[in-house]
Length: 213
Ligand SMILES: [Zn+2]
Image 1 (cartoon, helix red, strand yellow):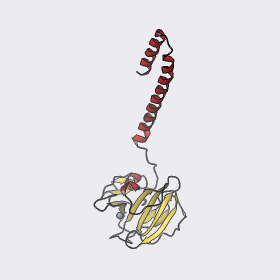
Image 2 (cartoon, rainbow, N blue to C red):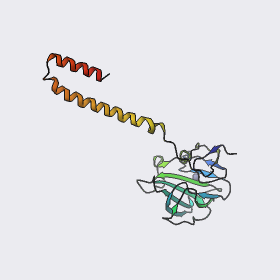
Image 3 (tube, rainbow, N blue to C red):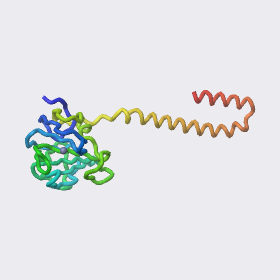
Image 4 (tube, rainbow, N blue to C red):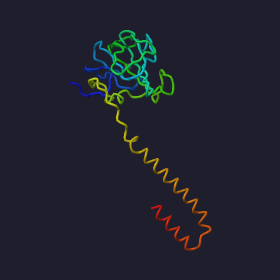
């Protein structure tokens, strides 16, 4: 049985292994290596289209890049047994077979090399620095750990937003708005203050004190 269930994965209804973690050192491993040990079907992890289809004898072997039409996320699948039967521009949907696991290019055994990049703002970048990539293990909902076994049953579960996005952002906005409002209020009342009598000034100072508590 698998150690982990993935929320989305390029293999479906079969246990596969993380044979090399994402950004593994010292080689700055730009993808995560996933293997069933055989030549199993590879499925799309996004609803989008074939962004690029290529062959790289000393690197990725037969590979393709898919792009999510909604988020702009790119997915590179490398070392495919054969070239994908799809063509550039063809539509893909989650769970659609796009190729077969293989060991073409720079590879020592059957596995999928999976890379992810947000290509909503720029074209796919090869040999790019770490910040250009997305950690595929995070996206799949599994730990980025070599040696673990994973199972995915084909039912995609959307990623949960992080605590940062859920709570911190609205609080920051709220405080900023409150500070700006108070500042505007101070400026408006400072103009009045200069024309006020002693009693009016005392009342205003009490108001400022209460408002700032
Ligand atoms: Zn790899």
